[in-house]
Amino acid sequence: MAKHPETDLVPYLRGELPPAERERVARHLDECPDCRQDTDQLRELLGELSRSIAEPPAVNWARYRAELREKLEARRGRRAWWWQPVPLALATSLAGVLLFVAVWGVGRQVPTAGDPVAFEEAAIGRNLGLLEQYQVVERLDLLEEDLDFMSDLDGLAAGRPG
Amino acid sequence: MEPSDEALCQRVAKRDVAAFELLVERYQGRAYRLAWSIVRDPEDARDLSQEAFIRLHESAGSFGGRSKFSTWFYRIVVNLCLDHKRKRRWWKPWAGDAADDQGESFLERQPAPVTDPVDELGREQTMKDLWAAVDRLAPRQRAAVVLQVQEELATYEIAEVLKCSEATVRVHLHRAMNALKKTMKNMEKR
Ligand SMILES: [Zn+2]
Image 1 (spheres, rainbow over the protein chains, first blue to last red):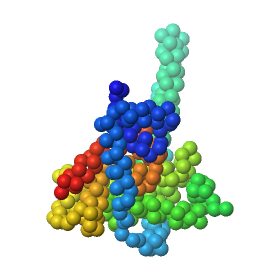
Image 2: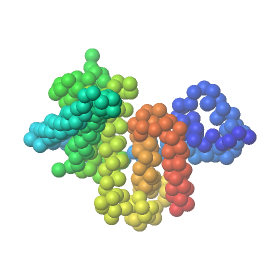
Image 3: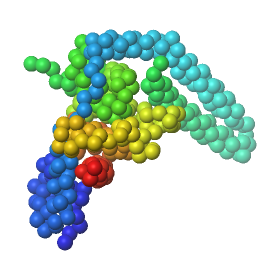
């Protein structure tokens, strides 16, 4: 006999299985008294559960919505005075620092004329300069990720009551 | 014709206050009931469902329209509730979820009534015991049961809400039902 289709029984009872799977489970049930018993118990259990769903304590919905509006307002207020200027200021100053590092990095590679080694160094230097510029681009990407991360943190912080 | 949930959500993304209010009115009952079914505390359920609406307000633009609005929104509610339970377990292990760890709920600590199982009181107790057993399930199993039995979501929708595969949902439900079947057998023995 095939493996007992244990995890298919709930979807089977709820009529969610596609025809082929449904057919396979039905055939198994014909042959397997254990799974048949399981299915009967499951049917009873699911029926019992849905007949006995409890209702939560009643809510005054007008008050609920008023509270929600207050919370939204409070959240907006908090963002305005504390959060929004921070990433902007942070982004600006970090970008400034990175730009300085990049410019300083390129500036350092000034070639000395007439010397093949110096010429090579200059070529490497230009590449290095390019590299550093790439690094800046990369870091700016990271910075963006950081900002995303920080706004996630903001979301999390906002998620905390109070 | 009434605008669809999805259309309202798109309007919320454009900061349409009326659309937001309408969505809140449509979903307030379901959001609160779903939260309550998972956290079982009316105050927390109120807070968490309101928080879900705030998240909806903030991130309506990220609703891609690939799933139904209800599934997308349930995911916000369920995530908040599961997070809440995790945090609470961590900083307040003696409250609320302690029942989970001790395998005993408030309802079960009450003396079992000495009544005929077919009479009304006994039946009420049976119902309570069954849902108390749901409360003791692992959080994701409990969420799967609540979404299926109470919110009548299909397995693929539960998978979207819990962000897992359908096969995983089937396993969650199978394990949950096994645990509940045991509870039911014990109740019959009583
Ligand atoms: Zn079988």
